[in-house]
Length: 566
Image (cartoon, rainbow, N blue to C red; front, side, top):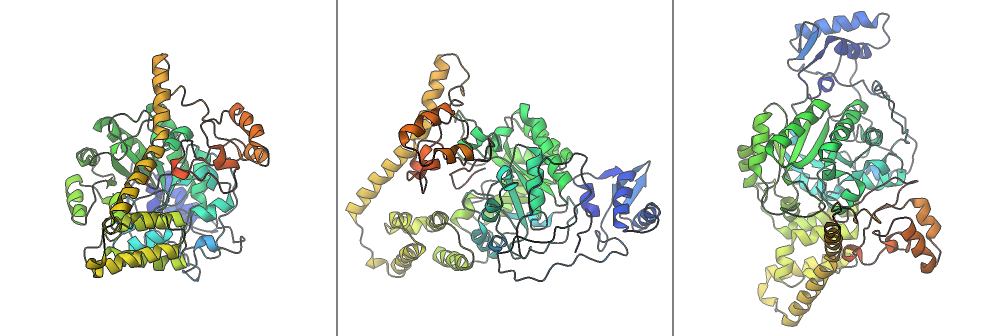
């Protein structure tokens, strides 16, 4: 069934008024194939004015309220959701063919890309549209986290009070053109609502194309302007778009997504150097069409890694409060300092924001938003394992969540290393069984001094390995400083992301043949093992080189290796 045109409330976006001509054009699109659509549109506008929904004065129409069914025009039947088995994730599609839905009125500029439709045998039914700024689902939010806000964990958090959840960061560049990647990166089902699709982007056409592909199966689109990872610096996205030279690009990204979709467009940012600068950014995002902005209450990252880091210290809620006070009518979500349930109310009271968002806190306690939860962390881990039976995740993600949920217990019973080294979900479940047994009968646990020493040595070695990248960057910065160059001068050398064609051409060749070509292509900072070796780099996070996916014929697609980003 063709979808209706953009909803009336959504037409206003974050604005309170717009020209009458724009509203008339919208109502004409609702009037179907009548003989005189303009006349019918005028009649509909008169009915809206009489109902008190809009007010017209001097050629300007102002949004005043809501109809009982605001987005259903007279004589229009409501859009019917297809009957489907909502236990089937979208990514499990076996048939790539589906009816292409009718699109909204086209924006002035046509997107450069025309990607294939996102495969799904059973799209999740769309929720009723919500007129901004009334976005009630933004109350208690699971934050976007690379490798951690995947489908089964979202479902777990929803069971325990989360009113909204974000997907992990998705590359809009890759999502727009790669059907296989879409199936991996965007998995959802009917119970996974409201859902915000969270994209990294630095190209308006690609962002708009990616947003259009999830329209109808996500309740909002979000632009990542907070990721602090080194890969975001190399790929020029996330918090590295917050410098003044990129402001026009950022606003064009928002405008492109707003023009391309019928769902609200959000943005997630970090604090800028001053409250005034952050306030101006939020105001500009709203003027560009964003319906809500989430503010991570820590300063944006810089490649120098000087001063307060991406996650150092408590979030500065006082700055978020000041931004909200300056923009009282614009929806803002506060991200940071939600460690236990009582923090929800205190943070809302302190900042005056419409909602709160948690990442680190909810990783440790998925029942963070559930004041009535009386179970244990082991119970939560069991719930997560049960969800995995229907909605699988990678072993690395499963180990990560188990380690975070049960860190205190695993450490207490010297089982943390056992959990991290698990090579299957069954092995990990066996470790959790031991935790449960020791909790029931603590006297059965015997402290192993030798194991403790080995674990300490292993941790020190691992930290030293993971610190190699930072040490490498620091050396290059010191060299640039000594020579009077920009601090990132040497960091840019060897930072070019290899293309897929280039990587494919290297596979099968000897290392002696590969290395000169790798260096000549300006890829020296990238891990050659990650790209050309079957199974990738075995050093994983301990590797000092960049692990960044190759893309297309020269496009850059970044995938941060840290679980929590932005």
